[in-house]
Amino acid sequence: MMIMEKTKKFILPETEIPTQWYNVTAEMKNKPQPMINPQTKEPLKAEDLYPLFAEELSRQEMNQTDAWIDIPEEVREKYKIYRPSPLVRATALERALDTPAHIYFKNESVSPVGSHKLNSALPQAYYNKIEGTTNITTETGAGQWGTALSFAAKTFGLELAVYMVKISYEQKPYRRSLMQTWGAQVIPSPSMSTKAGRKILTEHPNYQGSLGTAISEAIELAMQTPKCKYTLGSVLNHVALHQTIIGLEAEKQMAMADEYPDVVIGCFGGGSNFSGISFPFLRHNIAGKTTTRFIAAEPASCPKLTRGEFRYDFGDETGYTPLIPMYTLGHKFAPANIHAGGLRYHGAGSIVSQLLKEKLIEAVSVKQLETFEAGVLFARTEGIVPAPESTHAIAVAVREALKAKEEGKKKVILFNLSGHGLVDMAAYDQYLAGDLTNHEVSDEEIARFLAES
Image (cartoon, rainbow, N blue to C red; front, top):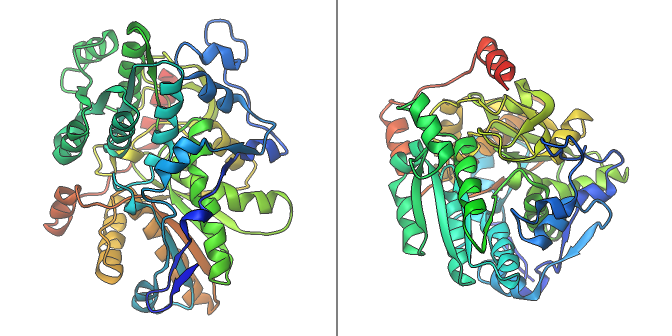
């Protein structure tokens, strides 16, 4: 083990990469409610998902008994390209805030694709490959998931089609270029290539897209293409499972720092990186050993956790997916065109939704200008330009650090830096020029979308 005291960077040796993922549902006292088949109204079984997902991923999705699930050695070998990722104490940020808090961040931006998304893309591509799949489809919001799966698909010899939310396709051309560099086909969504896309464009010709729309298109293509399966980068239980490698490493690294977090923070779109950093620490709360707070930071323009409703809803706009028990704004919800494209999703995963319902975690919303202010402060102190999604977690970490200053108390804060923003500089250009605005959705809009759903 190596500790670089000057920069407060805690780096595990390669041999310390976890050999198992952590499945929090096995230890939850109240399990998430089951997904429902919208045709039969019966709870889904793993085999119901086989036509859409790789069989092993379907089994992981439904597994509520095994707390630990082995990471295939082939996947673990690929993880070694960039894992373990560093845990860093943000001492320069602490000084700038003049806070007694100790602020740590897990740096997932060091992956080849620049974000945490590769943690699930690699196993999803692997399981599809060994089951004989030749083609996979997916959607992507800001492009992090699309780039991650493009690299993973190329790594395991699969063909990939990505439906990229149209506003992000236009705002983030270099994400598109990365996907194409790794061999993926990238289609702006909504498109004319699917029935779902054509219907939406007929009704709303200038619609700039949403993750719900892109999911519908990706599922439709997968179901119509031989030897093709669909993959998803957030929301579902098996995605949260794969991402727990983040928190499992962070737990060991916090021990190296001789500290333990009082607060754990992650930005929130569908739940993948929040789950990844939180669930391994949450298990100690569930066992009654710790009292750590867990905060999901979502955009004020897409506030499903803070202002949504807990109900069964579709995961996509057209209604192709099973019904998922979730906090939702309604699957017809049309989010504002904020730059944090990965957080523009109408619903939350079933595990996080159940945890929030039981008040085992917290949620806060953050306005766009506050997030970019925090992102610029982080860049000027810690030297890393964060992705717009990650700035939500940074903004809440700043809030918590300033509270500690007001209270005169030491507080240990841990957040997940889910990705860098080096291909998101157009967003920073707009912020620095004073051209960005805050977006908030009204109560009337939320009520209307929920009624439509």
